[in-house]
Length: 124
Image 1 (cartoon, one colour):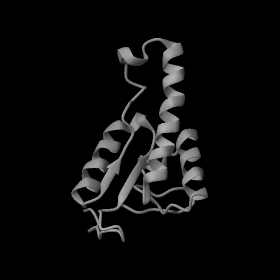
Image 2 (cartoon, rainbow, N blue to C red; image 1 turned 180 degrees about the horizontal axis):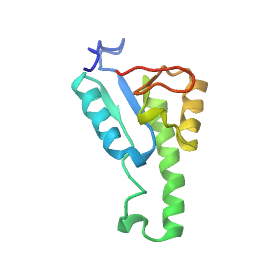
Image 3 (cartoon, rainbow, N blue to C red; image 1 turned 135 degrees about the vertical axis):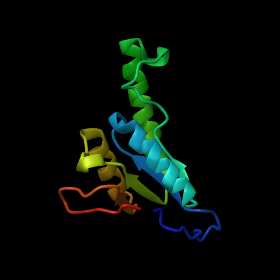
């Protein structure tokens, strides 16, 4: 059950950036659904490079796109009021760990969908 949202001091709903491995694309979509239903503006990964697509079929183009998407996702974290880590089974890969470190450096509140090794959890 999503937590009820209060508006920010700007009068708009809170913005949450979803972070997590795209190998859990369905879990990211589910988190997006619950966060949206709770009244939050959701910024989520928009491409799943683990699924075949003509936009990233060429390996060189895929490598460039990956870098572009990583930069774009950090900009989404910049815009967010908080970050939700979608981590089924507690899984956090290298890219997600890097995003967590980035969000922490910015002082963003971080929630998790599942318990982590550090014992952090919030089923939001």
